[in-house]
Image (cartoon, rainbow, N blue to C red; front, side):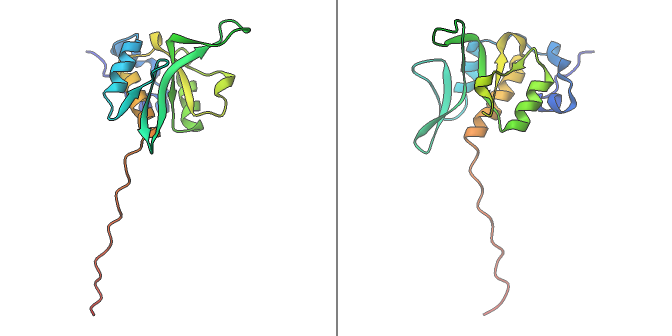
Length: 156
């Protein structure tokens, strides 16, 4: 009997990230592109592998290629195997980092910034999709519904 995949947030909170074997493994940049571009109003960066959404006239990034420092004396270069994904805050970042160190990591450049680095070869596509959708909602939350006012019951 096959086990069902556990949603990423449930896996983080229950520390059961060993469910990888039930999902398609080894995500790629093409998976990232397909997932990101399926989200409303998403745009792909022109100068490097990155995705954002236009919010109040400005593109807010939610997933991008990690710029890796290969040579300490040279500029960072985009990695094709690692992406950075926005998270809601430090608490979520720390939960993700603690949940699976093969998948999630960070570096000093991201200290204090709400994003985690993800090794694409270590994450299942369905987990990646959930993280990218959450990142999108972090920078582009749904509009708040107007509060309904109680009808004036007092006469006159």
